[in-house]
Image (spheres, rainbow, N blue to C red):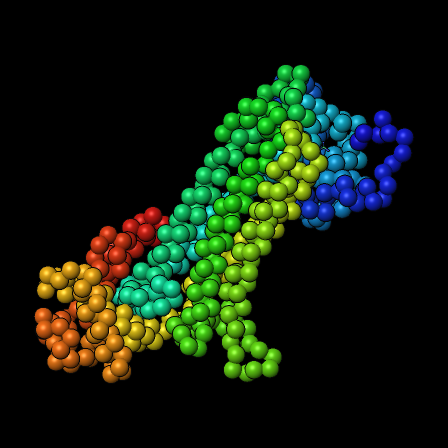
Amino acid sequence: MWGGRFAAGPASIMREINASIPFDKRLWKQDIAGSKAHVAMLAARGIVDGEDAQAITEGLNRIAAEYEADGVPVNLDLEDIHMVTESRLAELIGPAAGRLHTARSRNDQVATDFRLWVRDAIDEVEAGLLALQRALVTRAHDHADAVMPGFTHLQSAQPVTLGHHLMAYYEMVRRDRSRFADARARLNECPLGAAALAGTGFPTDRHMTAAALGFAKPTDNSLDSVSDRDFALDYLMAATQASLHLSRLAEEFVIWASQPFGFVKLPDAYSTGSSIMPQKRNPDAAELVRGHAGRIMGCMNALCVTMKGLPLAYSKDMQDDKPPVFEAHDLLGLSIAAMTGMVETVTFRTDRMRGLAESGFATATDLADWLVREGNIPFREAHHITGRAVAAAEAAGVPLDRLPVGTLKDIDARIDERVYAVLTVDASVASRKSHGGTAPDQVRARIAQAKQELGL
Ligand code: ARG
């Protein structure tokens, strides 16, 4: 492709380090789409004649059919997908193929292809996250009043409902989707036609190619067009954040599936057995989602470091932009699908959750609040009185609501029988009606809104 100036071919190690075709073959569809849009514009502007443009377009269609059927041939002599396709085009239609690269460079070509690819990737993630939200809302709806212990420091804190807990993840995923939507809107400007770095002297129409490829507009600075990869980093940062959320949910499933917790029975379809311990049911899928978050974050880090010291405009370092994005996207897709499958099919052991909520003194705050309300006692003092009640219950080995009223009165004379109405876990959750609180009425109202958001 640049043989005119060169007397010798590359060393074999140069061929190997230089080639991106082993991975950028994944851009083939976007590359063909970009080339078709480009040649249509060249013809419309009279830069290439109609006959050549038609031969080029037909050739590109044929190449697309070949790639679809047989995959993209990898031959390290042809560095990347752009060269593989152009050289195949030359085989198919002869010298007219050489007109396709008029008024463009591989620098704007690869920037365009990669933006198109990331845009498609975002659309895939969006569909996956939507399915996950649907699963969360559906299960939350079924368990809007199922009481479980809520934790802080992984210590029983106050009772909450399982529906409320699942809806917490709904909110996280909602924000993840909005991050991807932001990234999509920001990337949707077309670099094609920026050429190598400075624009072109040919009378091109960049608005035409931008529109043909579904971009909102052409980019406004040719140097920026070929030299930034912030759109890929936006994707990786959104992917990192989403993977952190998935990983936390995965971690909860790992904990909940452990024997001491026993909050869930993970489905066979997402568990593995042990080759030596017949009783084992291991939460491998959840553990791998947790593990993948680390790798996705690594991909983001890799591209940050690649980009941080590059002067404008294109440098070959930027060829390394693609593998981390491809890897992160594959890992994220698997993670979303696995978590969605688990959320859809996991068995929640709500009896066990309720039992633990009742045994952990989780209504202690309710007792303190009652003392404030009914006895007009300052909260700090109420906290102290309640602490003594918890100690008495612990010593007697009973939950708070089974302490005899005499014992409670001995601790503080202002306590009477009415207190039992707030000491059950159901009363506790029902009382937390503040906006966003765990009261089943609140949770159900949010679920109804969420269903509307999702079109359910
Ligand atoms: N294979 C290259 C990449 O992925 C294409 C751009 C090459 N441009 C250049 N000036 N060598 O980045």
